[in-house]
Image (cartoon, rainbow, N blue to C red):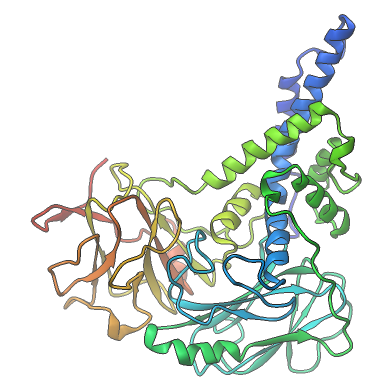
Length: 475
């Protein structure tokens, strides 16, 4: 969240919506039955309208509550992820299809590790090893799924270092030599990535990842255990119980009071105590409809992008008042780096408006000089699974993280063929897909300013025919 927020445009839009929904009800006269029906209609529509906005606003924190409970208790998370609060969990292997981050468009460029943090009782300390010049970053993400800070290669360097992690109300001074990181919420996630160039490096890079340690600072009590969360919380009316509980406990965010006041109108804001057993049937109907409406919107938000490459996003990781974008990113990717660390342009449909499909063959020619200070990669994902695409070659992305593994033309460019069959052209790089819908992500790690410049465009995807001739489709 940024401290420079002003009056929310959402409030005015909401007021207009409600006025349109209740025409003339202030002067309504009629029978008892008509008055009851009008009252129920008002309650249901108010709950559905405000509830939809509240669901989108609170989606990251409720989903984080769910994941934090699952992944800090052994044997609960179906992916096998587990570590106590304020301790790192390492995947310990290359990201593969069906792995711990399936369904969230994971990368295969880095080894992942993470810790759910709770600094409500006091600071925590993170020890980061010397990575010997190998790229890494720690992404410090609050309970709204927003990045509060980065440490690592770009920001604090590759040498051994310590981080002093504190909450929003902590007062004091970090010990000498430690990097102070202050979070906007007492709980959240620390997400780590360390560059890996291929399967041959798994053992060495896993050892490096395991050298990252996190513990409570001396004298800090152990944090409380996360409370149980229903498995179906995202589609259950108890979603609002959890959201209300969090809003009541969390420190208010500057500029959001007008929005939270709207939530209180239906009993789920920070001044209320929400109890599903005490609401009217009309309010329940409205809230249940709100869950269905908003959840569908969040889940479908990133299914379709504009033709060609989606623009490089400058507001990712920190979203301001764009709560819908925040919820959509959390659903599709759990979290996102700040754009200075990495950006992820997406490609779903060619310039003619045709969705990518593995029944066709595609090509992209990546120029020698991409606008990055670290490395870039192109990854393919199943359209339905949002996961890496299984293939016998074990190739899930193509990039320049290891210059020895990418084939280049005489001019330094790299030709990448994106197709189901292994190409006959031995001078090209192959990114396998299946004969079904898919999409692409181009990751730019440590992007240069020119990547954000108006008019900057990534190389276009070409469609190829049986003869191997390729061309950019025209709309």
